[in-house]
Amino acid sequence: MIRFKEKLKTYKRKPFSLFLYILVHLAAFITVGVLGALVIYILVKGIPNINTDLFAWEYTTENASMMPAIINTVLMTALPLLMAVPVGVFSAIYMVEYAKRGNKLVKIVSLTTETLAGIPSIIYGLFGYLMFVIALGWGLTFIGGAITLAIMVLPTIMRTTEEALKAVPDSFREGSFGLGAGRLRTIFKIVLPSAVPGILSGIILSIGRIAGETAVLLYTSGTQAKVVDSVFDSGCTLSVHMYKLMSEGLYTKEAYATAVILLMMVVAINWFSGFIAKKFQKTY
Amino acid sequence: MVSKGKEKVMHIVFMLAACGSILAVIVICLFMFANGVPAMAEIGLKDFLLGKKWIPNQNIFGIFPMIIGSIYVTAGAIIIGVPIGLLCAIFMAHFCSSKIYKILKPAVELLAGIPSIVYGFFGLMVIVPIMQNMFGGSGKGVLTASILLGIMILPTIISVAETNIRAVPESYYEGALALGDTHERAVFKAVVPAAKSGILAGVILGIGRAIGETMAVIMIAGNQPIVPDGITSGVRTMTANIVLEMGYAADLHREALIATGVVLFVFILLINLLFSAVKRKGE
Image (cartoon, rainbow over all chains, first blue to last red; front, side, top):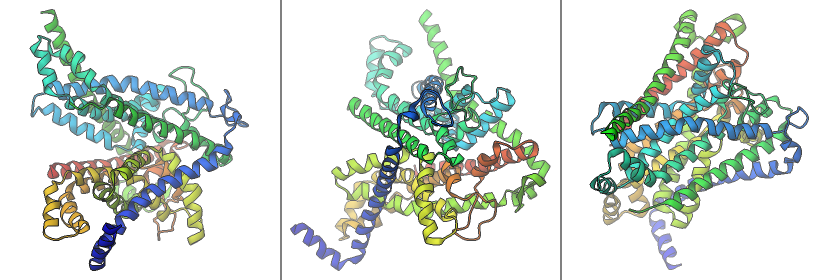
């Protein structure tokens, strides 16, 4: 209490400092306030609209079920990761473990990765449309959307893996080399296992990004609300489903409910990624 | 000797994987430019970029209103998002207790994770009615889009700014205190200016996010292809133009939409270049 009074005295003499003090608190309050308002609004409006009809196996115009979209979302998350994780992890291994300092290729790869990270999803969507729907003549396909998404999350996976590999102390590598292990063995048996938590958090980050993605999939994988039969079938994920519900204007209640599910998915993914980061956090 | 062969093979596999991102950028550039540039040539570069009318069924394709629209809403987002984001980052780095930090940090991360379609829904259901009450009209327009985009770029600005403010050596702060500054003045006059270029990089990143945002903007901007004449006037961004009409466009119309994407792509590449330049300079 005394400290507070003293502080108040200083502020009286220096009103500008008080002004700054108030400003930063206000900004933090706004940030949390906006998030709180958004989450509470969606939950309050959405939860009463959730009913079993929304989880029927088949979509009809009457029930506006989101179950097919949920299943598609799970598939659409797995498929791009199957492609992006090996490429991303391998390329990070090259960047950190193999390339020598000042290597030209490393510089170019860093630049292109940065470029990929900056490209907005609508450009990815256009590219996917031009390449898979038009140029290859596949039409709207699940696999077209998945490949496009794989390119989109590649920089995320590369960057987190690179950071995780860099965080593994050199003494680990030296110890392994000292015991006579080759480079490859050292990487797969010593370095990669120590970097797993970092890689995992990158993967979870990517899952979040894919699950919330709409613009990429709208013109690559299409908007059909049914579970895909094959990768060359067209089907929508939950975010695309929600966009469709909103733009048709007839399903506001269902859109609220879908928003709740999407939001909860994101919260769960965030929580899980934080949990993993904490659980495996090691100090060398 | 066998293992040596395997080492070599894997070395090449790793190198090929690293080339994956290069390949991706080349293919994306190739497809975008090869499909967009012919349309620009057919319409005429000047008519396309500076034409003020977008009437697809009369084959008039001028995207000047969309370019201006994108710039307006991005500028608005920066005006709203940067001060709040920067101040919040300063708060997180130098003002808050570890207890509050433990709430604030996940909150910012969650803000970054919320899908843009949910932001758009929130904007449509909450911000648009508020705007209707305040200014009349449809409630959709430059100001509404700016507010929502300002919120959406907050996490980008906050996390980049916070990292850079924390990277400033403690001695700057202590030196200012020793000279008799208050805590606030020490932070604002000594620490934050030292993190200037990092903060600028964060702002540029935010600009890239805002200009490329699609699904949220489409819900709340009104989407009229006109040069907006005020902050409550409806506006259509380049991103919205693509999504809105791609579904039914054909022939030159479709190519014009792809060309819109090319213009946006060039904007993004320039922003990326600026970002790397600022970041390198900061290092």
